[in-house]
Image 1 (tube, rainbow, N blue to C red):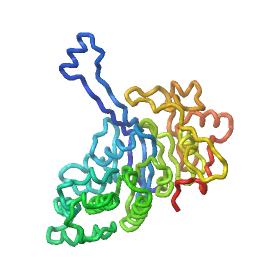
Image 2 (image 1 turned 90 degrees about the horizontal axis):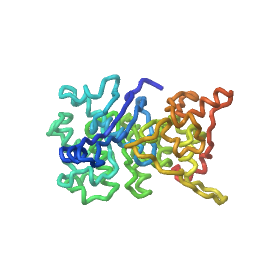
Image 3 (image 1 turned 120 degrees about the vertical axis):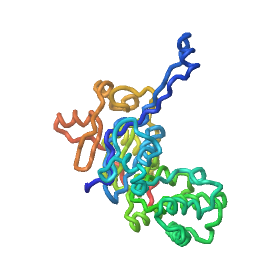
Image 4 (image 1 turned 90 degrees about the vertical axis):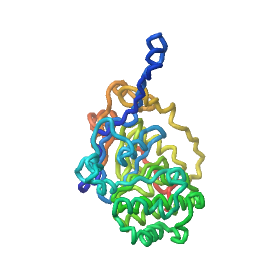
Length: 354
């Protein structure tokens, strides 16, 4: 991989709620109330190269959106570092480097809640470029028109409000707002999940076109494996705040290594003449307030053994460009066999888009 545009080093996020005055008194009087801590992200290491599209996949509560919000600057890490072009991202967000910080932008899942309902489209798109001096105010209107045309919107509707648009159009407005500050890196947090399937395909094609036109790099957060397969160059699998597998898209869908990734792929609907019984991954994802010791997946893993319950597996290379965090790889390497993978025929994945 070429020099990374973004690097996450030991990225960790914990949400804490301490006892207030009344709760402290209640605790002294014998109440069971206590402070709590949510382990949302736990020591994530990841490099993303210039121009790459990385898909970040995991169940709800795995920490995907928290990682995206930390990269975007909406949340501060509890531990670890985020480097953008070898510079700590906190430095870029100082007043003197404000324009550099704009190079990372985020597109949210629900376009209606992420757009100001009291602002016209021309102001939603044009406010940030004007405030940060990217475009002089005398040239702001043609600049906004150009951004709208880039995302497939008619500039004649610039004076309308967000509620006057469809869901797909509102998402295009959000994309145009992000592009207006000339970013290099886009974080797409479930950016097509709230759209109809036909509109999803249009927006995905728009993302791919914009990638070529602007030389963009994407972190695409999604739970839809079909979307990730269609869009991503590389896939990162996240479970309960930890990265469990990283692989090029083709390699991952051809042969998953980690039991969790195998379970996810096993439940992808497929076109097949044979009847097949689908079973969800057994058990529920543990609470991030009290994650299990050792491998977080051991409470649901069909291949669990004693070591999994006490020792956290390291994320290690298993093949060129592939990483996995599973103790089974150590067992198989010691026995001289290759790490286990599960093969899923690519042409049979139902949700794949051509």
